[in-house]
Image (tube, rainbow, N blue to C red; front, side, top):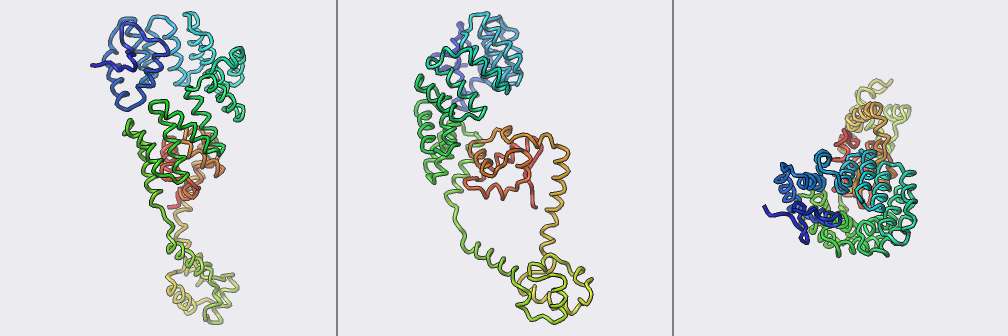
Length: 438
């Protein structure tokens, strides 16, 4: 089997590549579905090797392939070196084992790991663990690298962004880019913040800088497509989605989003349909006084506070007949009027029957899972478009989201089928769903 290489980088060669080379290799592996599959096969071909050098390389390879638990297990068997402890820390961090990750990063210093890089990775780990005080303390210890290290300013910006200090974060991303114009992560987060703040022109410019200098930065391409669709430039949106699908043909979000864009191209306002809706509303609001009813019927309706045809949709035949002085003659009289309009008694009650049952079920479920429903929607890790639409709808928690129907979400501007399917899938993964009226 031919080794997966990028610029001559072979993880399983006799000599281990440098940390920077391994980073480039990882980016190459994830740049396309084909590369990822081929690299996975290469890891499997070497996984049974027992030499110290091979065990270390396989451990790092498992981490690159996203097999974090296996990576930790394999790296624990490798000989002690800075690469072992750093990549073990990375895998532990992905698994949420933050304290162990910090210990492993600290241990790498005993094997000549770069102190600045270790400090910045520790700060990032504390940030992932939501220990902002510890992260800030770690970054303060690196303050002498201000206006020197692009990565330092990027990590400061990430911490500020997590804490809601968006302007300060953007300033640090810009400083990082002044020091290192090709710092893709700083560029991406700067674009993302511009996007969320409504500066779409700047966001497009920053995202395009990423796509012009890097291979296949999937999130940047997807966000660009979202922005162009919002602007009504569907051909450009499709172009960026096609760039993703060229290298990742089975990328589900991209596939769904492309369908959403195609649907947007053919969307139109059905004037006749809207007119029919308006006519129905007008019919339901028609006062009973417009009809030639008997004196007995008019008196009964007045006492029951039934004023319009719509009011009759919320009452049954049995309820009418149970009222004093309202008999079969009056019932036939009103049924003839309703049938001429395509209506019948109790129609609205029938439509509400199933939704009432669903509402009762959702209340019971909320009581049982109150703690989970109180969690912020950020935990669903949704796309930019979905998050922006939820912000516009003032949806902050999972509970807020599960009380919304599909129609309510789709009613938000720029919220399409792709975002709806993304949210439904994320909720389904944790055992919840949107409110149903069916």
